[in-house]
Length: 138
Image (cartoon, rainbow, N blue to C red; front, side, top):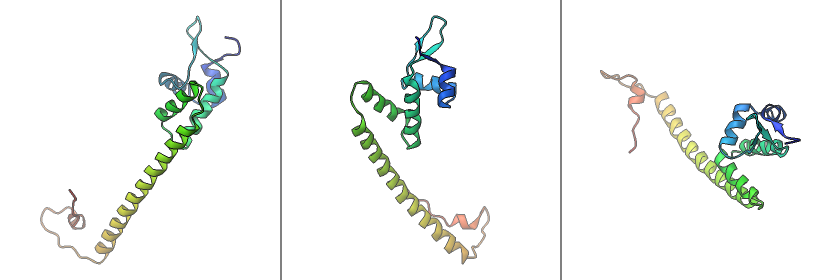
């Protein structure tokens, strides 16, 4: 285990909390060997692997997706096709969310404009007569 890193050293080199490193290992994203004393020992490649995990997270990949990518890599294949496919799924999901948010914004603006010019009648039991005018969908 020469040139191996203990978890504290890996944490310092990657600026990732020890708890996060243990979590990555529990998910199979990171691998260590145990010394006779039970300490985790990581290969020098672990620094690059942790940096890869953080970069993938920074562009929106889940830990599960990162695990898929790492599995392909560990089998000796280049996972770039999978990465491009996952990225396109994220782009499509974001486009759908943007459409939904734009529709919702338009709906809220319509309420705002309608309420700005209305003097709602307060009826007994109303908390806010403006909100009472909202129609709930199915």
